Image 1 (cartoon, rainbow, N blue to C red):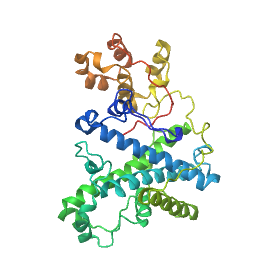
Image 2: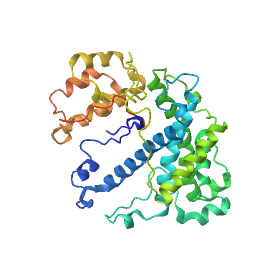
Image 3: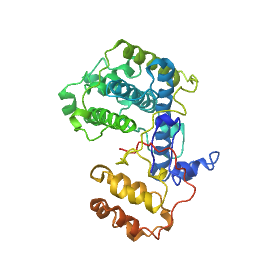
Image 4: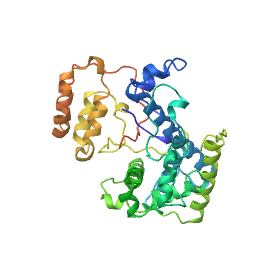
Length: 351
């Protein structure tokens, strides 16, 4: 089960995954590891996450006084940090999906029989004539598009297309229907993630979490412009753009010790596997919201090859039951994975 934390300046993969097997022999053929395109998808998400990390270091370098990743998160400044994290999402999505994947045939770049050509966005440059029938001014392969996407993630408004485009063009509907949902989801998830890191209440109505993010301040406009220029140079001009280790490295935002751990954002592997620790979890966790994430994190700590496959038939029932001591009892004879990295404590699992 993969997690994500750009503050760690690292990407994380499952110990037993297509990507892990490929990285054990990276100079050999990747084709043998790409059953059902699992490897391609995992590697693309590693690139997506890398661009998140790159954006965090870039933001810290461009505007160090902001204290992004370092200054304590409060109710007064959290919206500034929401803006910045969404900016890293814009970097990852525009850089990989819009400015690269949409312009290439991935199997020609890496001929291993992959049918995959998109990751998080169903936009393709080969359909540009169709897009321009309804929005002649659309210019995706242009630096200005970065600002357009980021303002969309902040506001939920994607200008240039009317309802007739959705009705008349399945190509446009497939692309924008997913994006419109994705934009709102990103605002919700970002606020939950930052509130979790700050130890704030995450039991907030979705309409509050999904509200618009302000992006009209001068410093925000300047940050969008400069980061968009850097991303264009990195992706389109293939420039090696790196930044010094950010000020938050080694002392970044970390969630406090919580009475009620939220396993949408807490790495279960960081909890010592002891009866006492899991007993506390079973009593303290808010299972109404995140038991499913606790359950699947726990399950992913077992060796699948030797796991009793009959138990898998019980998974849906166990998730509904929300009885963690029962889960531990049922799985007590199953083999645990050895040698897994237990760090960091804070990982973004929500999806």
